[in-house]
Structures are given as C-alpha cells and as structure tokens.
Length: 171
Ligand SMILES: [Zn+2]
Image 1 (cartoon, rainbow, N blue to C red):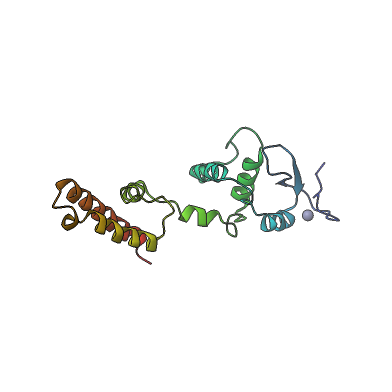
Image 2: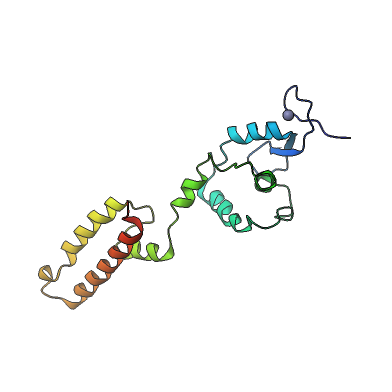
C-alpha cells in the first residue's frame, strides 16, 4: 500500500519527506515530487538557524557526492533535507542564503592576514584599505625613530595587505 501525498487534496504517491519542524525531531510528512518542490521552494532553510547550525551544514557538504542513504543514522531534520536534495536534484539551496554564506568563508591564509591587520573575518575590502592606511601611519619608521620592531611590524602588515588584495581586493 502506497502512502498518499500529504498535500491538501493531492492523490499522488507521497515519496518525499518534508520536515515538519526545524529541530532535530523525526517528524515529517510525505509529499509527492511536485509538492516537495513547492515545499522546498517556500522553505527558508537557514532562517532562525545560528552560525553553528549553518556550519554543520557546510561541513556536511563534504559528503555531498557520496551515497546519501547512509549519511547519518537518524532521520533528523538535516538528513531529511540532504536526502531530498541529493535524491532528486531539487536544488534546495539555490534560492537560500547557503551560497552566500559559503562565499563569505575565507581561507586560513586570509584569516591570518586579517589577524595581522587586527581585523576580523568579516572585514570588507574598503575596511581593510582604511585599516592599512592607519596602520602604516602608526608603524611608519619615520614616526618611530627607525625602531626596528615597528619596521618589522610594518613589513608584516604590508605582506598581509598584499595577500588580502589578491583575494579580496579584486572587485
Ligand atoms: Zn502531492
């Protein structure tokens, strides 16, 4: 006996799981292909998710190309979403801010460079530029009686800046 799609008045077979709540509960309802697409489109997966939860998603991205059935053991919220997207190429992430979040992830090299410049990961290019200017002023040998310590610091900052220019300064 086949399960019928849970969508109002739909008589198709319900083969796709749609999570009911955004926690890790195992609650879901079964929908047909047409209605799971509607469901996925209307669902903002990352709404109300904290960074840690999104991080979890991104780490799970490593399993993207692997067989999906054995990803995770329980049918929690995340697994259901993965299986939906992997089974049927429904592109559930296309319209979400998932891609934006991924794009904003920076490399370890850039992270280190930002740290040298006393900036955080989210610094924008124009912020980096103005920070660079103020650091140059601060550590310039002319201002520090040729103090070797500051000279080295300035060299490091300049290297960090040129690194960031390569990756973040393109736009
Ligand atoms: Zn349906």
